[in-house]
Length: 105
Length: 138
Image 1: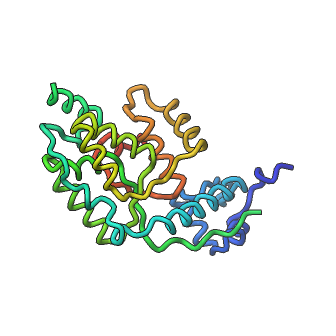
Image 2: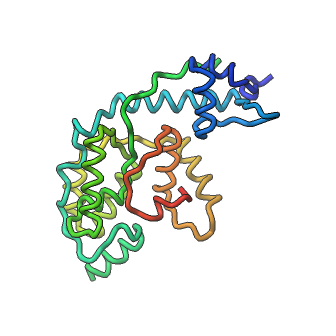
C-alpha cells in the first residue's frame, strides 16, 4: 500500500510533528496544513504532512541564513537612487513600463 | 515516517516584490514616502526580508527600461536582499497556476513564482505596492 495515501488523525499527526493536538488543529484551521473533515473530525494525508514538514524545515533553514533586516539593512543603500518621470509603480508593473516608455520617447 | 517539525522561527519574515523595490528606489514615485515608511517599520519590527531570483531579474528589467542601465546595475550591485532561488518544483507549480488563472488575469510568471514560494515557505507577509500582486489571484 502507498504509505503517502494513508490518512492520519489529528492525534497521530501531533505525535509525528511533536506538537500538541491543539496546535495541529490550529495549523488546519489556518490552512497551513492541508486536511479533510469527515464526520466532524480532521484527517491529514501522510503526503500533506510530509509536505508541511518540508516547508517548515525549508523556512527554518532559509531563515537561519537570512538574518534580520535590522542587521543587514537590505535596501538602505538603494533608497532614492533614481528620479522617475511621471511613473507610478502602484498602478501596476505594465502601466509603469508604458509610462516609462512614454517618458523616454 | 514523517520527521518532526523544526522549532518555529521566532523572527517574522516578509517577501519583497519588485514593486516595493521600485517605489523605494524612485524618489519621485508617488508611493515612495509610503514605501519608505513601510520599509523602516519592517526593519524596526525585526522582520527578515527576502526575495526570489525571479524578482531580481524583473526588478533589473524594470529599472533598466525606466531609469537606464546605470541605475539598474547600481541597484544590482548595492542591494543586500537575501535571495531564494526558485527550483523546478516551484516553476511547475507556478506554470500550473498560471494555466488555470482567469482569462483576464494580468499575473506574470514572476508574480506567480512569488506566490508559490511564499506558500512553500509558509510566508504570509509581503512588501508590495503593485495591485496585481496584492490581488487575491496570486
